Length: 73
Image 1 (cartoon, one colour):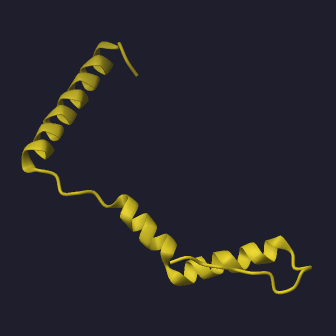
Image 2 (cartoon, rainbow, N blue to C red):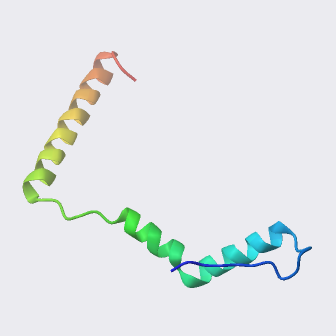
């Protein structure tokens, strides 16, 4: 679905055309659906989620250890 906005008269300012275009995009909901599709991610397997969680916990522990030793911020 494409949105077309044409000049009402030859002297119409480009800001007005842009404003009308933005309003039409918001009214059609195209931007909201595009953003929703960007955020969607396929379901991840339980094994992968668990592996990531373990790795995350290890990194946190290592960072905490380094902070205690005064090696990192």
